[in-house]
Amino acid sequence: MKLRAYTPTDGQAVWQILEPIIRAGETYALDRDLSRQQALDYWLQHEAWVAELDDQVAGTYYLRRNQAGGGSHVCNCGYATSTRFQGRGVAQKMCLHSMQMARERGFRAMQFNFVVASNQGALYLWRKLGFQEVGRLPQAFAHPDLGLQDALVLHQFL
Amino acid sequence: MKLRAYTPTDGQAVWQILEPIIRAGETYALDRDLSRQQALDYWLQHEAWVAELDDQVAGTYYLRRNQAGGGSHVCNCGYATSTRFQGRGVAQKMCLHSMQMARERGFRAMQFNFVVASNQGALYLWRKLGFQEVGRLPQAFAHPDLGLQDALVLHQFL
Image (cartoon, rainbow over all chains, first blue to last red; front, side):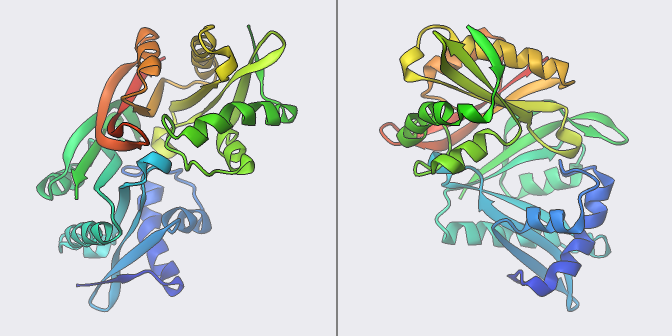
């Protein structure tokens, strides 16, 4: 698996990964009707990377500061894996890469603000990679099938 | 005290309230060098109100959804009181007003994402008004004098 910086020619591949996730509305607190441009604007606000497998874009993640000002030493990431490449360690590889990139940029910690409690696969992975629950937002996410779910705040010092 | 919707003619008064807060960098995770326009753009992203005392703008708050998509039933507010009107119940009045406005707009809960632990006055008030700590972000805020402080996530169902 190869991790490299996002380039504008990756736009369509990244959108093909994000679109089903956004339309499903089960994991990210994003409007389900976001356009391609809105989704890419959101994803690419700061730095983004892609993971390549079999010469295809298998996943993507972004890295940015989680807060401005006095909170800018803590970063935030979002990860998305292509449905076609599930189960091949893409998310884990991206997360480990993001922690390294974050350290190189001087971030002191990484925080995930909103991990939906029903997203068990993600929670299992983030915990395995060292993230701890520092907050639980009660009934903060309306899952289209499962109804109101808690959302977790996960944190790790770098 | 009178609460009313923000109008563009309040821009200077709101900036006069926000500027010392932003420049001090002790409570809001905002870049301390924000321009007037950047600060007002941030504050006025969605709906905002002002509190009037003695025919002057004594405070201001904003109300917006805290997340998009499946998280859009939870709102977020920010409050700022003029230094000249501290201690006269402005923040409390604004918070109670914001909870009512939030209920009218159909929000099910209100969340404050980042209350700096050293901001004892705010914490005392929010707890008095029914907010509960649902998260504690370790060392998430670099206070200019006090060093790294935890930030709290506060929540209340409406």
